[in-house]
Length: 182
Image (tube, helix red, strand yellow):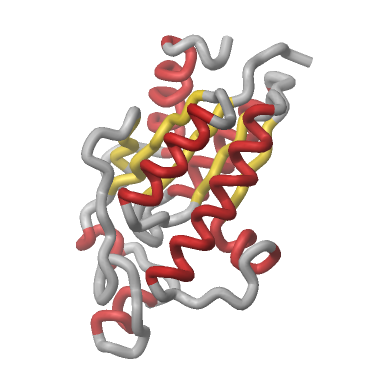
């Protein structure tokens, strides 16, 4: 078992931008290295921890605060807590960052999974963007609901320009340079 400090690796980005894919790739890498790691996926959290919440701004904020609390508790107990949720509002992400760094005494690394809307619509296997554009899905982030992209994330994964492996390699290098992993 490798020794490491806990920290929060917070993925944010639009639906289909590659948050979960990259987060899963890093989770596997950390497990191979013997690190304690947990992945908090937005879809799973909605099923288990935030069941019953809708998609109003208040409900989205509550959902993200719950994810942030769990991530903070994990990180302060030596676990790498990886989150993969849209987390559309900058104010709440910044609140989670502050709580993590202050109360959790752990590093918070914001990772922006970025792809242009056109690329997301093009690779949308579920057809959610087309439905949202047609008005069939209400409160769809990036179409009928806002998404506030991070102004200065620690890391940006250009998911329409690079492979998962390229993004993962760059991110692992960044984390090593920061001294968060070996």
